[in-house]
Image (cartoon, rainbow, N blue to C red; front, side):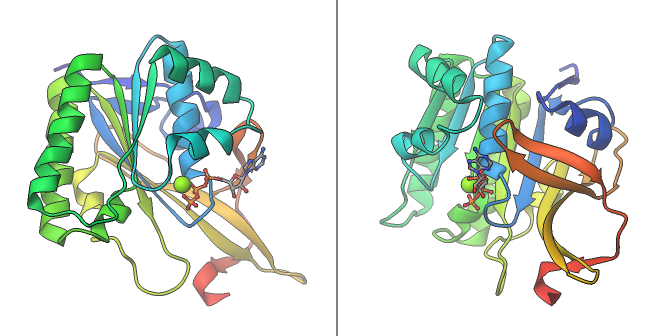
Length: 245
Ligand SMILES: Nc1ncnc2c1ncn2[C@@H]1O[C@H](COP(=O)(O)OP(=O)(O)OP(=O)(O)O)[C@@H](O)[C@H]1O
Ligand SMILES: [Mg+2]
């Protein structure tokens, strides 16, 4: 299958961070980030952007209901388009709450559901929010099986798949951390302390890996505003990770 790239709708991200290309297709992208940095809204705005190009998107969340997810996007500029695409079936949001725990059978069921939805709907974009939440319910080897199978599905069906990973602010990581080796592109979004007379907490974004195209590993300051994730300038001031702050 021919490798292409699709623009994400975030020109700065595509040009400054992703080598002027965007996300790979087929390909897997891992977005690993601290709580509240904008992982969910960025991936939803990505799906809206791709929907405007005529592509269907499937958003699988283990975290929140479709209604809650939509209602908390109300203040973003992409909200009206998101609601319209959801109503038209161009974007499909599926909540799978693993409250009773997963087992090996439920992984196969889950994968079958995802595959069936992809086969039915000819989705081009798939988002899993989040891989980390699966790690809370499954053995690491089972999460690995699932992620590997989703990756195979991605190549077989010519998709762009975005896996979200949760990076904890405190304590040990819940993630089983193999995801970084399976994916084609990895982006980290984390909080840092910029040092100075008054230290300030800000959000940093950088790409750590691309198997396919050249990337720029410069660290950028980012904010979330009503238009979504916005890349500000390069971080040139002295800074330290959140954990040391
Ligand atoms: N209209 C808005 N303008 C600016 N910021 C907003 C607006 N609406 C929500 N936010 C902020 O956007 C941030 C990103 O939310 P989002 O849910 O995408 O983050 P996340 O990384 O997925 O978080 P979590 O770790 O909880 O899943 C939140 O911190 C929220 O305060
Ligand atoms: Mg989220």
